[in-house]
Amino acid sequence: MDEAKNYKQSHNKIRFKCKKCGRCCENSKIRLSPYDILRLCKRLSIPTMEFLKKYAYPIYDKENKDLLTCMLKTSPRCLFLAEEGCVVYNDRPYACRVYPLAVDPFYNGNLFEKKFYILEECIGFDTKNKVSLAEFKEDQKVDDAEFYDPWVIFKIKIINSDCANTEEFYSRFFNVCYDFDNVFFKQALTDNNIQWPDNIGGRYKIIIKLANKILLA
Image (cartoon, rainbow, N blue to C red; front, side):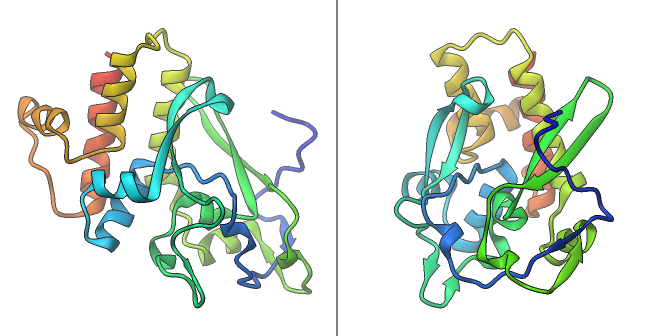
């Protein structure tokens, strides 16, 4: 763990209240998980490929050992930011929910742990309002255990594996983890005799299951 970071425990208080200034919606690094994409696509009533073309872009993530990562377009500003604020606020990505905090995940094959720390200064800290980390997460509806942990554990396994960093591997990674309307993904559902459910939670669990089976085989 990085000793230079001031990690926050659930009971620790932070002096913060969002001023809804929109500064964090400009030129920010927002990594999208499959769950984020599912929620946003449902909110916008569009297929994943259309969402990816308009609102996101893939990178070879240097901060995660060149793992293929889907990023939200936020330069010069997020496309979901309007005069009235975020137009997808209730379905905003995980990284948006935890801001101005960030997370360091740790996984050794058995134990998974998350450490929260202040990512950067924000005018929201200029307040007398104090909340505990637990209260902050509850208020922001940060769904950690069910919707954050499985994806991050999978990514750590991929990073620590001997999976070849080939064009074919990254193509499969993209088709399994980010685009759920492509032929490869639909065939994977058929091959594994899986019915694609209507609810987002059920779909997310299937994505994680297929990702582990196909990409970590």
